[in-house]
Image (cartoon, rainbow over all chains, first blue to last red; front, side):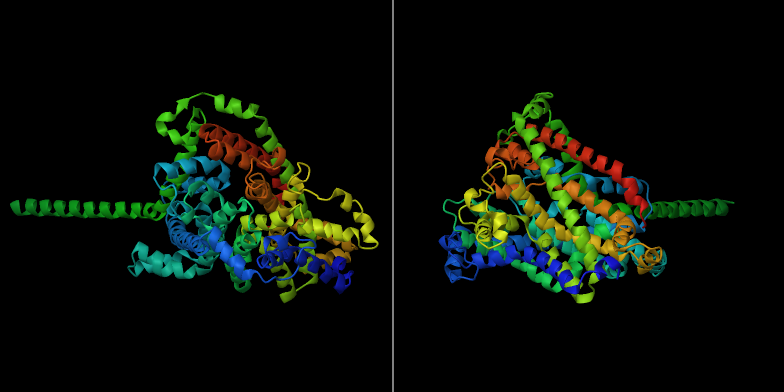
Length: 277
Length: 337
């Protein structure tokens, strides 16, 4: 242990961390509590820092201002389809880049890497117009499909393949008479499961939390995803904040629960580019 | 004789057939990689490459999408001229840079010491518990977080104001907060001076944990032997941190800074929600460049201008990133790895 940290007493080290933890979790505790209070209770003085007893009425109010479960289903639907699609298509493309030598490969791979540097803001307008031309405006398809073969995912998986799969293995499979697709499907895919899991985590979280794409693509309230639906009730006259906070809290629960069980994998996945790059 | 010719003819046709088959096989073999990467090619061409080119074209047109494609008319550089004479554009760029700096620096200044402390003073489950907890904001939706902070910041009896008020009546430290009762109600989101700091706090709160995880991974690569060697050489505690640990994590700093710069220059959701989507908040103090782009394209329905603005914004991000690369890349890459 380096001297700088050894010179501090253990209590103060924990104190620093506990302050950090408290600052981090306060808004989560706060939103959970607010979901059980009425609007006037939330804005009373002093503010109620305890759980109230209006959970049921807030829940009923929440269902009045938005079709909450339908919207939750929409979010789930978009995120699951986008995740499955990305795991399949990204690994397929990554295999193409990994297993073959062909003319133009390096150019395409280079363009792909460069395209990761293009800020999404730049593609926002053209993306919207393309979606409009294709007639998929106001559909869930436009939310999950365009990203299923994305540069980040392909790059991530190809990198993993180069470290975990040897040429010999591919050659051996070929000698055994396996077709190209079969080698990819039955030989390679089982060996890159950790990378697929990483990609799935990143994709699911990204899709679940996505706000900008739904904002510009969706217009029918019944098709809204959680982020968009919550934003849309923010500006209601006399906003029922208790109900909105309950909805906000519920919208975070799935990822928080997942994080409880898979925190190591999720942290590793979301920082994969940094730590391995 | 005839026998021989027919034989050789048969041989020729056989080899032609074989050659054709071989060519077919070679063709299929050459096609295979393209089949595998076709999903990327198709989606890239349809949703990125073509749209990008089209947006160049569009930036020279005046077009309200409601009118359909025929409503497009060529206006030359008018969109660009209009954009750079629009005070809102400059205001939004100023706000963007302001927020990028005010949120970027604290994230790293807080994250590096915390990560160092985590790696050097804790191990096992304590380290994981602390790191994971501070990472939670990063996996949570920005919309949800911004809505929560929207209520926390509320000027009439929001909990932040209530706590400040409470602190001012606590003995001893109350003196520090003596100004609070006079300043009440503090309009965090309703005054042009406080809006940007209020947005910045949310961004810092959300991304510091992410940087802590990156820097922890960085400090974990520094071997104990290095610290021991430094100690033998007479380095004190502070020097070990400053001269041994910090230079070793340069590549991580470089990478984290790159992500922060690119991300912060595109800030949209936090200001959008905290100003309730209302034209960038009071006197546009919360109007970031992306936010402005959204207003022009989707609220005012001027797609041509919005396309021009997105290219101006792109140039801006590219410039900022290359300045960062120019000054930091060599140092960043010179570290280990």
